[in-house]
Image (cartoon, rainbow, N blue to C red; front, side, top):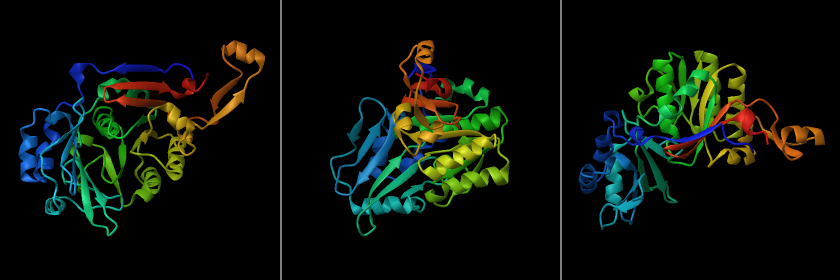
Length: 324
């Protein structure tokens, strides 16, 4: 595989973890047990907080971006009464065991026992601002971009911010296909972080691909934004949308481009990959081995960005990266 299109690290002055008023951390802390709330409100590392974990019979934990990793918030275990109190403060869980706090970007995910009772909660911080300055210039190309990274590195935050820039600054007709209200927040009125973008809520994760096509057919978008592409139907929908000339901004789980190439379901996001045997002359011209990887079809996503860390990204121009 040839060198990446570019790779870079954000300057410290552009830290993605700066606290913004519209992050509304107090709303997240308000649903927690009082002692945990007081601890977190006084925490100087609050702007580094990723999630709070409450598991029945275990010590409550907070997970941070910085090197401190996970830390215990107290020395007594979480009770069922505390979990029930949190459940009363949040929205209804969907089929994917996710809920939210209306008017915010924070997400709460449930762990259930065999009887269906909630015995664990992951209370995840939703950020309104990220590292869009790192790829702001790519948006001027008007070409589709796929963000790849492991869970928790900020993929959803960046597509949320891109929706705002495309709609408010570049004046594009943007439609967000928002499964579990991950991008626009809980409630019928989307969070201001998405700017003037419109949002289609997805009743069930299995319907995500259907809503993607509905967005194109019913609302004439110039841009569609989709989070967590993961099924064959969703990949096919991406191809269909790209063929209609609509710009796509999407995310998928994976450490790097190689994970997408080797994934039989997701490889079509970059046009599919086949091994081609070159003639001796062509191999000499390309200065490479006779067996190379090439795309089967044009990629629905001309750009793929690996988010290795929140402030360290690698940008691939798919058409050139897949040539050895």
